Length: 363
Image (cartoon, rainbow, N blue to C red; front, top):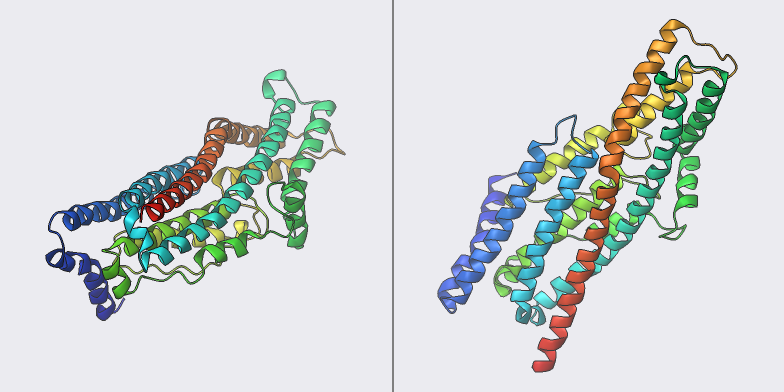
């Protein structure tokens, strides 16, 4: 970024400090500390997330769970800040900025609903994997015609749900048929665009007029957009699309790790084996890889396996067992966190609107 932009960024962040001399010496300083603490916490959370986003952890259930935990912490601190300074929300331009944030957050609720549908779909795949693993369990002895036929049928059903083929519309239609929380015309890509539409760094005059609250709202909106984008990238949902414009000025402490994570996820989506994936979740890709290889190894028209094929089947089964355990441990807690994100957003919006109503009545 050019030096002039960085200088502008530093001047933006210092505007609140310049106001201390013009106002009550106690209140602005406590507000200053509170808002700076929020910016610092957001930065620390995403620096940690970026540091842990290696090839093995990025977009795993565990890593995305940490992302949601970080979002919930930031959301809670944001809620407290809004509550502590609710009288500011009725003043211009803060009334416009907070209304804009809540409109964007409502769009995020639809994303959460669609993601929960996707989690339910993954749960159905998990049940099919259980059938395959039970049929191919080496502890039961040599695989016979019945076991191979049973597992072959389950694998075929599983792989049809991925519909990894040249006609990507088949995959979209399949996801639409399983979604009950959003309409058939709903689009995750368009919803993300709605959340991020016209999202811009606050003007210097707005920062001054709100004593820095404008920067807090901008930060929370940016994090909301990024977290929803990661969920759509990872989990199967209607009309997934990752081409959302991201630009967060680097003078924000949190912007560098967030943009680094964005670049890593985009690089992941461009890999040859993931370009047409229904989701970038690590466990989905491991599941798909191993079920596809098992399907190739198990020929339902020939119910005997060579020694080499039997060894390869065993290795694929062992990897699928690891994926199953990861799903067992992580899928339900992950779904609860998505549900918690939904309810926290609703709670924050409801409390703020109630507080605004009471303040307005008092005036």
